Amino acid sequence: MTLALIAVVVCVALSATLRHPWGWWAVSVFQVVLIALGFVHWAFAVVGVIFGLVWVYVLYARRTITGPSTR
Image (spheres, rainbow, N blue to C red):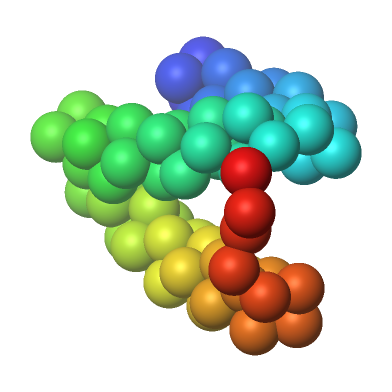
């Protein structure tokens, strides 16, 4: 239960970083961490895969709308 609450707090905190370019990388790394937490409990892996797929779509849509990054 505590680990789930920590994951929720980290997700909320990382959502505030999306205004910075490095925030997109941080959220991507956290998706991998969330899937890896599946070794603790299978529900973390399920949530991590679902949100990971959504995140891949968000990154695709962002790239399609804004074009390739020039940074």
